[in-house]
Image (cartoon, rainbow, N blue to C red; front, side, top):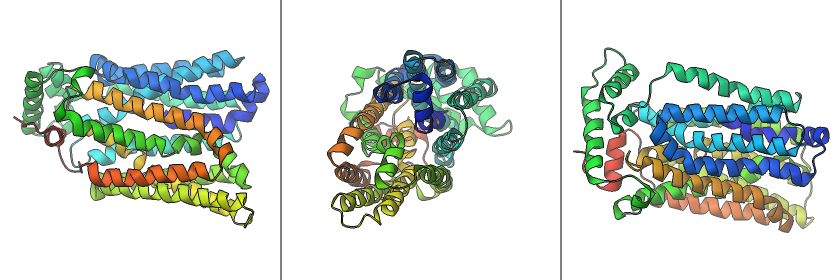
Length: 427
């Protein structure tokens, strides 16, 4: 669902503009309004997930996305396109938070990272499918293909249990134990895990209140800094500059964008698979540090190649260097920075503030996504090399931030992680 939305606009740009007579400015609004919808969805994500449950929030996500795709499919002008894209963005902003939280809350500690990282792998696959199919199918057909996984999710939600931790939070004890038993297997002994979850949840109810204004307490400062910092670095590192304007980057460097799309369609799922394999072996911190370092290198190579081109020193090497830089950046992003911030976000916040803290951190992510997607063309015109040097510097800072601030969460229960971060006792 996420990947098809992110990858939709780039291959369909010329066809939509020609068929509906859109100007470049109108199409830019259509492409970027996804981030506005995402910001709105992120603002409401925690509240919806807390009130309706994780499954309920995912139902809302799927419904909004289907409505958005249908509006695009039947569009005859810019207005309906924008409404559809805005609806997609709202569903995307909600789903980007809720899906990793749900997966983190249902999986055992020793495989939680690998399961949650499937999110980024699926996102990469969705983008790759959009890039590949978009090169030879009509843009309305491509939108129809984008609606298909939304329908699959709606049907699949009937077959899965609600998050046991959410059920414990709202006091539905019988359903909590039934859901946990179903997830662990009918013959599994869930007594210890169920007791730990219930005791920790009850303890939080006694000592803490929920709500956005209760976040800014000293005991939550570290968790908030880590969560918001990772979300900011994930977006301000330049992802949407590459993802939304890849064809412009390749064309400016003299590299065929069609070849670039195919290469990206291959590299993103490959690195996603590597991430899934390594997540619960190497740990979160080493993987995201390698990812940040690779993104820094990729942007630096891209910047150097455009610097060489601007100074007419060696135009022959620019296309190859830009291609390598883009592949290194996007491959490194898919390895860690694309998913690990969402995993850690789903792990470090206690259940009593998870909704409001998750909404705040998600909003920071979407503000960064909007800012990068809006500012890229202006910065690229100002200096085709300078914009990538800026991204490289931010990624370098991200490497230092992770090394100094981010805790390792591999192999620990959510309750253990949250107790250590907030310095509260488990019992």
